[in-house]
Length: 170
Length: 101
Image (cartoon, rainbow over all chains, first blue to last red; front, side, top):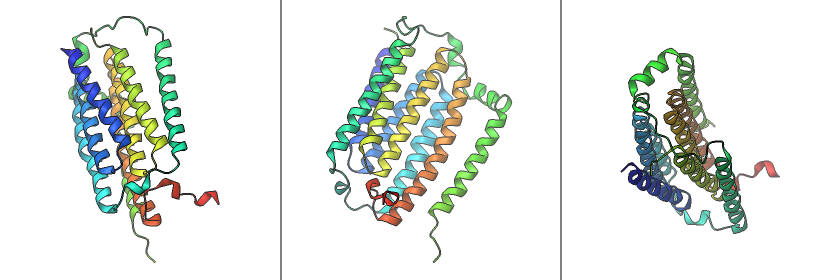
């Protein structure tokens, strides 16, 4: 059962990820990326990270992708086709380099100690640690300083985004 | 067949590779930003898989912070995209060659 769900999610995830990087129109890319993020949330649930799955859907599929859509709407793109198509040599080289990089990653995984051992399954405890209760406890005790710094980082990002996108006064 | 750590690692590696190919081949700034998001998520999946199979929640806390940084990055990145579009009237990164001349 678990295997079937994993296989289905993985297939949908890989398909929509490939669609993200191959579509000409950015709007379709964004919609496929939302699908990819939902698949990621599914994996997180399978791994017991229920809180992070909720955050994934709320923040990534909800907020970030809507931001992307708003930017596409604001920019008022007329013809997305004329952007691509030039310098196919560079594109071919890019694909070759990317696939080489992927093979390198897989080779590293294959040579990691313990790569060939049959998969073991962690106990029931592994499905408890990813809940909101345990993560909240960790965030406000052991990781309270990084938590505050993350807040400052978000404030800086908001100010920076406003400063960048503001129209210059002439 | 049970799904183990290796399956998740291979899947994350494949997704990361798709992201790398996207960054290397596309010239639309928006799609490059989306490929970067894809790579960030693949790394997050690796962290959560390790966290689950080693029964240690610190990896999940790390993913929490990684998502915060990703949100900040997208905010700034899209502001830069808007600025690029305002200056060059297009999203083509090959037109951003001011420093070349």
